Image (cartoon, rainbow over all chains, first blue to last red; front, side):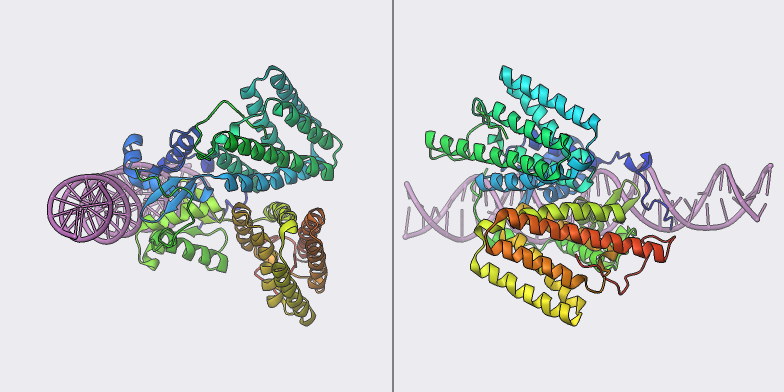
Length: 248
Length: 248
DNA sequence: TGCCAGCAAACTGTTGACAATTTACAGTCG
DNA sequence: CGACTGTAAATTGTCAACAGTTTGCTGGCA
């Protein structure tokens, strides 16, 4: 047997992937994250197969992978369901994300390049501007990119994979996007602290500022949820995507 | 559509799982971790289906899940291969495991119960005894259980899942089990430090001692690997499971 | 009206067959 | 002798059909 592909960099041949499973997987993922498949709903294999013009085989393979990823729930003989999130799930995700974010900071600090710092600074500036104008959409995007960049720069593929899986899962928690008016500015002040600890190449400080940032985001969201619950009791997590947003 | 199974605790009906996919998955996992399927080898769908007495469908579903888990590598049109680990993979895993272990410590510290501490203390004692007698097998098992318990006690299901996936992946790295003579005693001293910080309910100390413990394990393994490479250069990771062991 | 049994439809679980690609090999040419 | 080409075998990718379970509905009964 040809044994030569041991640990060589991935060649183009290995990367190319035309398989239906893969295409289906990304399509399901998109449908979940866009809300097209509502939280808690069942994935109908026949319907989806018909819609995508494939048979059930690729659908099942793709869905098994997404179950493992955490976006879907498998209940034997019943089907797979878009994972339903509650407050405790949000807390779990925040706690784990805090740990991963802190770890990323501490791993990056000793080896961050000036070019990488420049990229981060630019995003920081963009968020600052967005916060000034109250442009939530821009702030949200830049915020995601800021943290994803820090994680990516560590070059730890497993950390990157785990972090991104967590971010995707967090998107299921629609209420993630509720906001207090000035949370963006607070949040970006924390970004500044992270940036400064990275500029000083201080792993402990980078861990601390990064961890705190997410922990604060958790606190902000929890109080926001409590307020929401008090305002409209009885239907805890049912609220449709609203105009309020919490900044992490 | 029936919508009622929202966030209820998992009932027995939901837990039971007789599906072939699931059985196959666990069997493949076992074969990989036991070394029955060697690192880098291809998983032959037909052969495995025949061996397990099922068709290729369940095999493929199970393998797709294990690809997502990280135990298998999928190369389109070529097949799935038992993931091949190199030194860099080991470093990645150590770094991430350090972060998760530290996080677990810091999450558990504020809420650890006396009963849980007693369990941990007992394992610590078992490891102490095993180290005295040089009983590597016992030490290794108790060590795994010690860390798994700490993570489990956090009750963060995502942290638990990520941690266990990482431990499984680490098992692929066969050389994990090489040892310096007195590493066990050193390692258990670090366990004592972790235990004490938990007993003091000090999250920062628990993070620090836990993180350091794994980071030290990484350092121990790296020097062990370097020594090995100097002793027998030219065949870096090819060594069969030997009698030397590195303690994390 | 409310509850339950029983039947029918819908759906998931599994299989075997076919299509497309990759791999192995034999024969040929330089 | 070694590299190359074409063909056959092996293997993965995909599909359609069948089996078993779950779900939904209808009608009868208290």
